[in-house]
Length: 353
Ligand code: TTP
Ligand code: MG
Image (cartoon, rainbow, N blue to C red; front, side):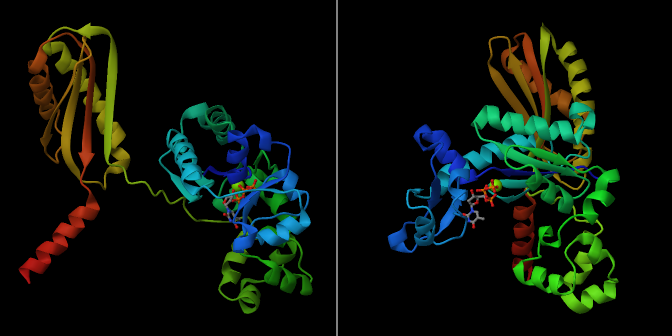
């Protein structure tokens, strides 16, 4: 059973604009293209939503609905910078982050150790950290799969979260309106309504063959979704370039023997940290040494095999450079850039031909 969190920022572009100009708080605003350029609304704040101003609506129409609407130009570089900082925060919890857009991501926290592995508390902590760092609110859904997590993040929006535990799936899903299922748009929802189907409970009564007959290949997904089932994995997109472990010592290490002992401990930790990356190819290995005068030096070598004596040798090399008491030691590896490696291979193949 997985633990998935879906995070979605509240009124993302509009919230950033309100944060950066408090005069915009409490009045209806929207971010989008200008009316005279036939622009559309990207998003609006909750004050504007009361008037019916929505994403993807023509700005001209939005201004008819809400003549006092304050329209702000779209500043994608600014929103992107915020989004990347929020993403870094996600990575401090797990590598398994799948961004869906600038303001939305799935996180697989099944293996997370923080908060005794409680996905609910992790989601709460992430939302609090986003607020502390960015003064922006986020909503979260916590569930055993992506489909349910995404629906859950909308349940207590804005600035809220909703949890669906494995035990709650059955009760949750039967009362879920079919138009909440991703992929069920207006047309499909109408078709279902014509068939007397409004809730997932109604969909559950149809056999998979019937679902396929009426809704094509999507019928297979519907069969699973209306039972709260979704096997899709969170697809992490970041490629790790390196893994390292380091330690700052309470008391400086005064000779190479002490350093060699500590390198052995760090080496064991590095081997543990590298376990999830068994498919990556190691390009080079390094030892970082920081001395008590804060001078820092790194010794590295090209080698794919992990061997303790290689790291101890590197430590010796780095230590010799200054021979001062050592306050920090680090060991790590850089991975080969597989994309480049593939290009090199194909270039070689072309040359061979
Ligand atoms: P959403 O998460 O759909 O919307 P939102 O964050 O503004 O509001 P909510 O509180 O309901 O989550 O989209 C995120 C951002 O993507 C949104 O701030 C603006 C942009 N966007 C567009 O540019 N065009 C669109 O049609 C939509 C839906 C979003
Ligand atoms: Mg959002």
